[in-house]
Length: 447
Image 1: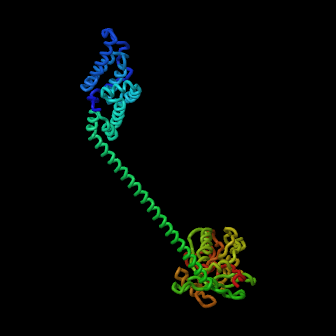
Image 2: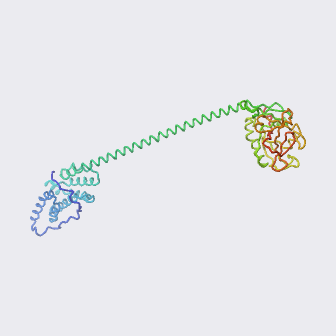
């Protein structure tokens, strides 16, 4: 089939099959039936030439004038379909695809097309499909269909689509390259994310392992420290008596940090064979905070039961120090002096009250008692504790002043034992007064 349709793209107006103007009956000018047959044969004979010269409207008019004579209406539909195929209107192309199967059902009509060597309905349908693909910018698919059709216009369309196909192929290649690049980037990102997750997991595992090892090392060192402390802990004697001096705990005293803290010496004030009340033999440190009496006592108590307790005694020794109900009743203070107390409290380390100092050491307000005097350590002296060489202790060392927990004569002051062994409450240099801790020890726990 090398007959042609020229040029199918020249007409832009699409016509529907229903809109084709056709006469319902033949015009009276033709006269007898034979005139219709002659006109019919003439129209078919002229159809190919009219199509070749692009005079499709004239061909449609010829068959329209014949009305329903023989296959005239089919040929009219056929020509109108070819006209619509010239359009670039997607709806017109769609109507062609709808009408061509109807025409193809008439065997007599399709035989006439073959006999006259006119494009078949199947060829026009393929052309319409290619045209729709072309309108959808699917140039390569359209070109493949055009190449399969033996009509010149299809060949022309094939050639015309070459640059468009190349553009389409280039665009497809570009998109494929972009998609490949995007896929590669996605995979690279996933790989980087996976590598980062693995790195973080490895770091976390390493950190956890380091923490575990550090915890084990800390536990080992703590165990060694406790073992060393227990080994170095000062052991209490089998039995104690009032007036004995025992060693218990350790605290810096000689100002030589290289040899470590020294054993603390305690004076036994009272014992029942199971527990004993002790007072440090020396003033161990200077602790004073300027402020009202109540603030001073609170801070002083916190230091005794916090910093001093944990630094001077091992865990085992701390367990031997009993919690004592510290009586702060009015009868514990100096008679006639302030009675501003904070009430009785339970503490493990504390300062003696005036009543206790009087009972155990013979302290009084107006009488110097040598037994109440206390010396100080080199470390305490370095910390600001002063001694008075006029007054010496039982062992001949210069005596220092040391704090009591009882209120002074005037509200806001605290009582203390002077270097000579009497009780005072006023001083211009409170930071020079020493701390002598007191506590009750469970003797049974140390055996």
